[in-house]
Length: 111
Image 1 (cartoon, helix red, strand yellow):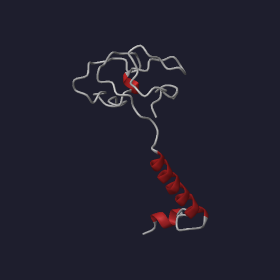
Image 2: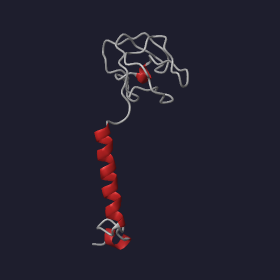
Image 3: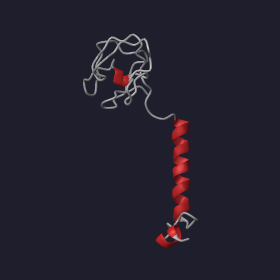
Image 4: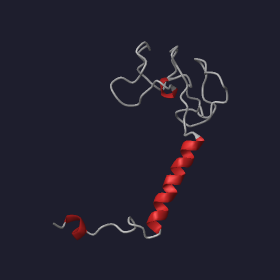
């Protein structure tokens, strides 16, 4: 789902936002680095596109022609797999399986 990096409001259009578009939820610019698939939040190089212009403020509107709206959220299959893993983990613990009780201090540090 394409959505605002700040408030999470969904982008209703199928096409890319224009340079002047703002989020209907919070009013921030939509065509900005923080919403771009090429943007990385950490590291010295924030944009993975070498030809992209240098933009100092990632949350401000810009006219970068390489902008590609980031898809946020998990695919339904991935979310379902995570839910199954979570359920299996906690069911094993509650049923008294091997990981139900943590090891004691003596068990952990005995010779």
